[in-house]
Image (cartoon, rainbow, N blue to C red):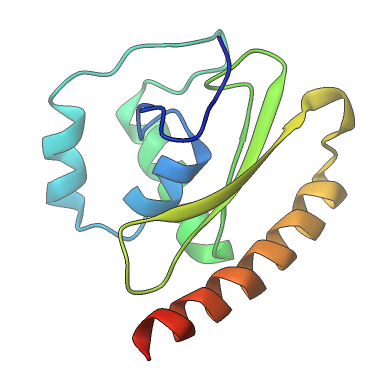
Length: 122
């Protein structure tokens, strides 16, 4: 089962979700996690302390990055769209997703989401 436009995915396991969760108040993230957290792959982060660490790293660098946490063999980079509760993401087979490649994707996503955020504020 792969990802598709409009398909719902758990925020704690997807880069798009983590990009959005990173900017929510901690209390709201706790409320959402209280609804249930389950591993989707062997790489899934289900420990709350580890998840909050990932969210802190996402805030610090400005983009989320996961490697096989939602879908085996697929990694994803995502950036929240400023002023919305949405994110834009790019999924890549892990065999091709190096850290340098992820950074290149993130740079493009950051630029794109900033432009989109500006357009939406007009």
